[in-house]
Length: 191
Image (cartoon, rainbow, N blue to C red; front, top):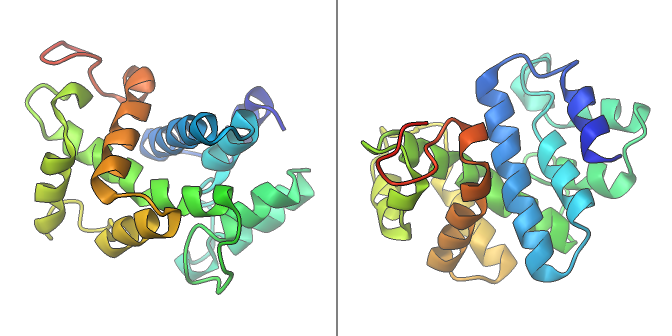
């Protein structure tokens, strides 16, 4: 599957702008890490795009992402992408074995959290977000309460990267798609 075909696929399942922005953020982080690691950027990006596509249609939250994995197989997505989707959370019981699987887990919660941190900044610009500001918001349990902070920490550990470096890398990876994420592209600029 290429990106264009994947975006067309998503139109059948993704109903809200919020979910689409999350998928685009995770895609951007996955592509950036693929470039860094010398991996297949298209494949990693597609994995990021589809990892939560079933969130709004799954019968119960417990069935995510297994429900979606079955659809991905039916629609011809490769098994490595399906497996990355299945391992992006811990409740499926599958171990993350490949760099793509570990990276998807590591960027999923963090990408969404970085976007949330950015949206509460007066400038709404990624240029004003740092690992320090992300860490500060992680301590505020009322902020973005659905984001699992332990998964953010665990993701960096599983990748074998320093958490602050991981945060900085994800922040930078989102900048090229800031406008698509509903964020400003420069400090103090309007979207």
